[in-house]
Image 1 (tube, one colour):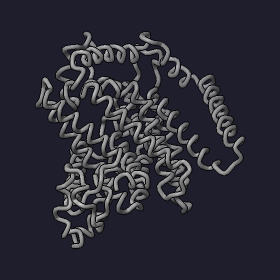
Image 2 (cartoon, rainbow, N blue to C red):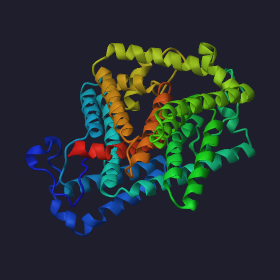
Image 3 (cartoon, rainbow, N blue to C red):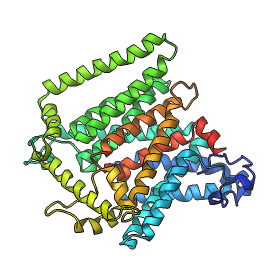
Length: 446
């Protein structure tokens, strides 16, 4: 997770954290043909991975994730290590908690599978971080691939509305107040997963629209943002909707603060408030006038009368009981461990694959330390991103997009754990890698 480039000499060995002292053991290779080609190889693998998130099979994704991890391992052996920054530091804390939770898990073999998955995702994050620190232009190339997959999936999803709707009807819950709502799912076979996949990409598309200079590139980003937003709305995922409102709202406020920073003080304070009120009024009118939207929003307040709400409440109550029984190190990471332990706590007829809440899931898997580590990572990431509101650097706009993505995923994650699916999670790692290579983060890393 070093931020130094392959050509850097690196700090003295005494200043390098002992966890990273193995890095740079093959530093002599950095000047050779392999070392010079590592950024290109890493970029191509990451572009293929991000473009293929909604299209490649799980086996294909696993192969690409493994290739990314192995590439980072090779690159790290060729590159002297630097100090650990705040984001990487909190990730290492989470990894340490997960290792302990695995060791003390009541189902250690199942928890070990979850730990291996976590390590594989951290390998992707580390490769992204190394590539963006070494060659920042790759942010735009990876973003273009991410937007390409998003655009294709959005078009396929919207096309489903004009084809046979019988397949879409299976996602209509007859016991819900939103009975009869047609929900698209595109290539992901699940409307909530489609919403989760689209959510972190859309703020990045808006920033790409502002950042890219060529007209064709801007049209590409604009088309992706518009069709992606429409597809997310048509998933009728309530968590996705709330996350989208949060992501776009945070991005709008941050961009306003950035673009009005030279305005008089009065207008810097009043103008964002006026736009927020206007956006709220438009949203309220849309909810009042569009019946499917109104019905779906009303289901949020239906409590246990809505079957989806009732299901989640029962799962949350069971998850809380799991936390009470193992508050310090949880049951271990991963859905395999959860699937073995949850049946001991579940209420009849309420099977679940996760806690349906990221905070609860973190506490179930790693206990209170796991939850605190997750909150620490959240705070550190947002703080780094907010330093770029008034910055003029090349990475400022991507940093604001990353903060908006984090806000959207955090809001969605209160009532869902779709984030832990690779189609969603890897976009989140891309945002963390973007933030960890900011100038402020680089100074922290030495």
